Every structure is written in C-alpha cells, then in structure tokens.
Image (tube, rainbow, N blue to C red; front, side, top):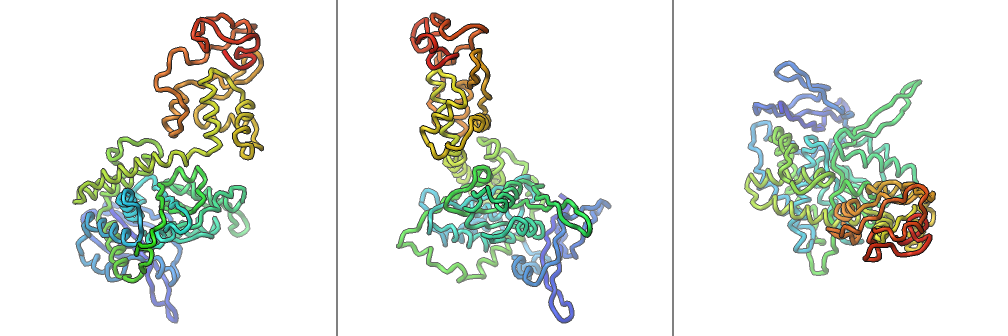
Length: 494
C-alpha cells in the first residue's frame, strides 16, 4: 500500500560500448513519482525497509530493446505528472486492437475478446494476486493460435516467446526478468516420460501461484547449494493436441476457429501501425503505476464471482475483479459479459479436465450402482478393457483404485467371502461426481429409498442365506432374486 515500483532496463555509456542497467520507477502513497537506481531495498518514510526480490541480473543492450515496453517519452511524461489513462477507455482500445486482427464466431467474440484484453492488463499487475490464470489457446491447424500470440506479444508485460526452451533456461529467465510466458507448440508437454519435459511441466504447474518456485541443487565453488528460482507469473500455452490434465486445470481455455476466406483480418499486417501498439503499452504501464493500492484491494474481492468455487474461482477472480473495476469506471455491462463467458467456458471445459480413462471407470461404477452390484477393482478393469483394450492393457487393479479415489470413491472393503469390493460407493458420491465433472452417470436426483445396496452379510453368512431377506431390491417385493452364489458374497444380483 505504501509504494508501487517497476524496474525498467536502460542503456548507459560504459566507455567504448553501451551497457545495460536497471532503473526503478516509484509511485508513493502520497502521489509522488520518482526514478532511482534499482537497489536491494527501499526505505519507507517511517524507517521500515522493503526488500526487492528477486533481484534481476544486469541487463544486456539486447535486453533493453526486448524488455523495455515503456517508451522513454512516456516515462518522461509520467515523471512530469502526466494524467493516468482512463481504465474504461484503455480497455476499449485494447479490445478494438485485438478484434481488428482475429476472427471469432459472433456469439463468442465479445466474451473472448474481453477475456484476452483483461488478461493482458492483468500481466502488468499480477503480483498483487495470490494466483494468476494461464491461457490455453486451442484450435485446429490454421485457426489463428499463432496470431493470438503475435497480438499478446505486443500487449503483455515483458513477453517471453518460446517453443523450445529447456526447463533450466526458462525458469532462470523468468526469475531474472518476470513477465508473461507465451509458449507455442506445447504438444510436447504430454511427453511426460521425458525427463526434460517432466522438469518443464513441474515448473509450469508451480508457476501459477505466488511463491511458485523451481528448486535446484547447483555447484557453487567446491560445494553444492540449493537455489530457488521464482517462476510465478502469467503464461499462455498454445497447441492442437491438448495439454496434460493437471496443467489444463490451471488454464482458461480460448478456442480459436479458422477464419472464412472472405475475412480480411488474417491478411492484415500486424505491424503496419507500430505507434498504436506502443501507445497501448505506454498506457498499460502508466495504469499499473497509478493504482497500486487498487490492485491489492481487487485481489481480495470475492463478490465478483459468487457462483464459482475452488480452482474456477482462483482462475477467474482476477479477471472478474478487473472487469468490475473497469465497469465502475464507465464500461457498462462488462462484468456480466465476462461472468457469462466464464460460466460458459467452465461448463464447456469440464469434459477436458476428466481424462477419457477416468470417465470410462466412472461410468462403470455408475452402472454397477444402478444394478446394485459390488465390483472388485479387477472386475472394473476387466470391463474397462472391454471398452478400450489399448488404453487399459497395461493397467493394474491397484491403478483403478488409485484413479477412482481421486474422485472421492472409497477404497475397496473386504467382504466375508474374501473379495475386496467398492462397497462404499453411494448415490451421493456419484451424484457429486456427476455434478462437479459434468459426466452423466444416470444417477437420479432423488433416488428411491430401495436403491442403495444392502449391508454386508454378518460373519458366517453366505450368499444363499440372503434369500428371503426383505431388501426389496431387483424384485419389487420382499425378497432377493437369484440363487446360491448370486448374493454380494459370490456374485452378481442381490
């Protein structure tokens, strides 16, 4: 709340050659603006000290060119007391710039464009939030994914474009300079057996939350030292074949569509008017520096997305909080537009978050509950192999148990006959899975009282002894159907 700061790489004369250095631009709570050398700490007026971490490495002249999105003219105007841009007007101009270059279906265009614009704005102020959403740019070949990256690279804070950086190169770069990662051709992230990909994936999984780090043991002189690299920050990933489920759960999906042959947008030169891009970047920097306490307050707003919880809330709250603030500045209807788009995106993405193999197992469990059967993990696996032998060929019954437990299905319990069955499956558990993951398991909203499975037999009781017990299951009357061996101990129908 006391101070906002932004480090800017600058060129300096180092005798026979140019060198890079960092300058720190600061806005104090009383509105005072200044430029100072970047040091390890800032002393507050009351004597307290704020430490700056991580400390960026010395910039090269190339870094100055690539990282300095805030022009020298705009910085001078800001130091001289220039008025901060109007949030609603700036948001509108960013949306118009995005819409000028990409074609989207009419029903999706407003929500998608607003989401991209808000994410670009968030990239300048994300340290105020405890978590930041990733973008997953999806779509077939030629649908405009690379075009989106071209646009984002001209809008976001310190863009780092990559498709082939190694894990160590990437986490060192993010630690040194921060900013937004634009990771194209991310299909290789599914090759989790590769140690290099596994390292890259672990860094991406950690980097969506504040404090996310990549920790490495590195040689320092004659010994080894544990070093941590800060990898927190906004990231956009584009690919055709999809992302690993754990990474996908950290993403807001943006689905692209191939433009029609009559559309002029794909043929427009994205750098035909560089001054427009620079003006937007300058205003985004100035906006970030003008409202430091506002960002901290927005990060605490929970009222902007009351219908969301868990990861959905975490991903959409930053964008919806920004939308609410911009709407208050004059962009009428923005919050509802983005909220409706968010709920639609969440609903459409539920299937993608549940692997096909898991969905097959859950359908088997739902069918078993409806038929009043208790299955062992081996029986579930056998049915799964009948559905998709290639996927489940190398699975083990223990794998089935582990996968189902992720969704809250209790581990198998041992019956009197020695079989370990999924006895703990209830309508409530299946109904919760059905609602949370958007999978139709055909579990009724209000099942009849006779639907649950009967209790296990007491010690010494065999399946045939269950005949005549008044369970009312599968017979519509007071007894069970089946003969000896047909009870839960020995088999199928009770």
